[in-house]
Length: 294
Image (tube, rainbow, N blue to C red; front, top):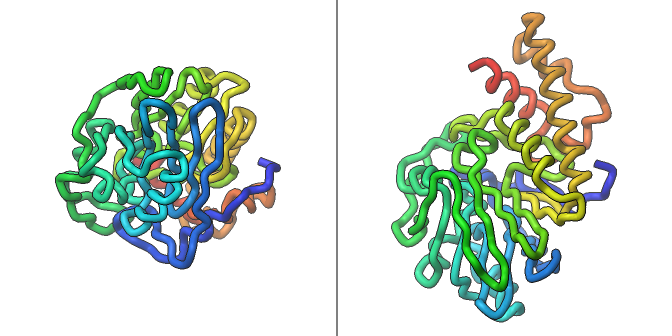
């Protein structure tokens, strides 16, 4: 977690929305970065976009927000096309699916079955009701456990990891390029967002990341949901931070401490930077408290 972060998740706090995590105001830094093989990461407003670029066209992972679709398309056009043939959604949150509507008329959208279900229904997000998405924004192909797409000379494996960030999380593996996209299972060097209203759990996230650490090769590149392109070592640091802090909170819960008392006590200074993003220290303490109080 010592690596400098190329951007600040704190910017996500500028404007809240019930549609996703949080929308940006101002002018985010839209740019693309070559990751490895045929894979690129597109940074901008919302969750990080993954792109497979090659002779078959473009396969896109997540779409950010509808109001920045033109900015996203402009970056994609530099790589050859602004009309992806396939779109995967890693989960349902609006900073990852908000752009589905402007892309959906010309692209085939694929996601876990719970993503379509939550997008098609009135869904609670951070205590607010989110209205259903239009038909054009919904995934047309869904799966329960996983699916593969053979595209640009490699197998793109999508597999479901349950009850982590949400109940509809997908991790994608570009098998030849040796790149993984983890969606919001990974906030680099920051406390994670676990959406308890959408079936997420802290223990599930810990287990999911533990499984991924066994699966991902040491030399793989990792595109997180938020943060710079990362390595297995940074994922391991993130996992350890979640384990350590959640254990500290649970130990105090076992002593009968209330949520207010836990927030007042805070966490050790070494976790200060981890609490400087979208999920601050108090929000993380409350998430752990609520997750393990069920």
